[in-house]
Image 1 (cartoon, helix red, strand yellow):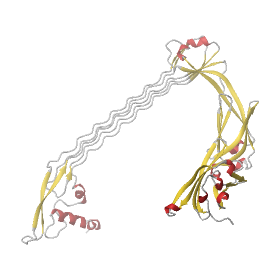
Image 2 (image 1 turned 45 degrees about the vertical axis):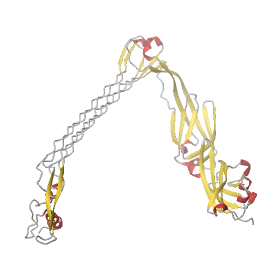
Image 3 (image 1 turned 60 degrees about the vertical axis):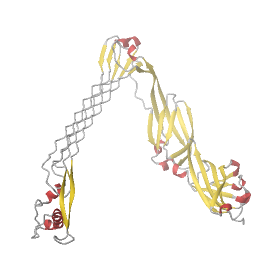
Image 4 (image 1 turned 90 degrees about the horizontal axis):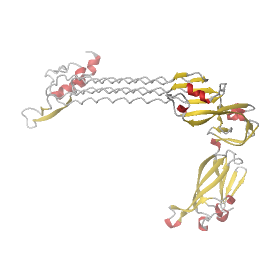
Length: 467
């Protein structure tokens, strides 16, 4: 006997016994159980309908061409319109199920085949944008000779969803199968009728309609009172900090004023966005960094720095979030210098830890050390929550005796070591005595320049007698 068939014997025997089809001879071949394939479909007959394919999305419309022209008294007509987006395709309808033939009086519940779902409609393509136009002129009135069509393309319509098909109905909704236990003729022999049911197949869902494409934008007008084309500008640079050493970087920006009423400048019937730009002036500024931080600039590797030239001819410098920098800016003779006094990795900002908890009474203090040794540059403020064990609760709970900021006069710093004079705070004397158990939470706010961060430090222990 084939090994694969032998491995399925327990399954086939169980099915035959369950349905009462096992011959007296003990043969494993029983009616309607000639293969595994039948067992797989025994509880669901027929074949479900196939789902319809989704419709393809429409292509986006092409945007109009951008153009630069030098205007004179000669008439010019330009078509810079964006093209319409294509319509999305409709989704296919679902296929009808194959309802097949429902078997009679099987010993299990069955399901009729489900209908096929409809495919979703494709999204409509977005409309193309109108092209932008830069006009160079010496006489503003000459712009009236320019006819421009820089309209936006319409979005394509979304495809319609395909229809789902109906599921099959059962030919018989319920039936009874007689089941007997025990030996015929004996007192324990008993037969019962068990009811089994067929469930109608589910209808396939209708596909959803695709969304319409978005309308494009009208083109924009820019005007420049010049016979010469504008030079390209570089208003922004993004560099690794290590690239800034001993170098100057030239930033430039073409400054524009925003106006309204573009079509009033052009030939009648022109179509373009109402807002337009008028060139004002060209801004140029050099930038250089002066490094006075103790650590060499190369130790900060690829930390990103962004330079940006504003409309006020100021150079803004932005460092990566992972780097805290303190410095000052100076600008003269078209050169901006930024002097870096301190540069500290963010991970070194919150490396405070308790060093010592000492003394008692008004001399009680908590010493905190800066493991990164950066406290000569970073401003630090402390807030404390001081809790002592409450004897009235049988030494099982803590009572808050003080919560608030620690005044600056009660904090001393020796290089990278802070001493917090907790005993000088408004804490009851009985909470400062030796042998009292305390729970202390200190929140340190660390700041440098525009950056700040908080660190919470917790300590729990017993006030000891002074030595």
